[in-house]
Image 1 (cartoon, rainbow, N blue to C red):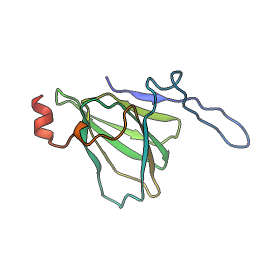
Image 2 (tube, rainbow, N blue to C red; image 1 turned 45 degrees about the vertical axis):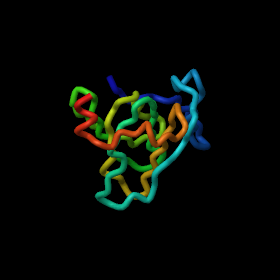
Image 3 (cartoon, one colour; image 1 turned 135 degrees about the vertical axis):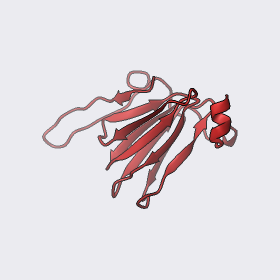
Length: 129
């Protein structure tokens, strides 16, 4: 089951701090990091699944929704709007992101390097697996 992922939040009057360390806060060694930003209003990002990659998505700034579809066709929506919360997605989870606020910044941490062969872009094929 996919659930929000809580990260440490160190409160300090000079400004708060959140961190990620393997294996204490994240269940995989990070092999790739990417982020999306400047997403125009009404646009959708993602729209795919990974065959073997796990991913942690965090809203570093602003907010957006992550809509997921599991292999059984069950859909869930998670709103990410705090930099100390994330969403850990296992392999074989269809996802897209929508409803980006102005200046939203999404951070993605993956357990594999980029591999074009790992992507599933056909939703119908994904659901037939």
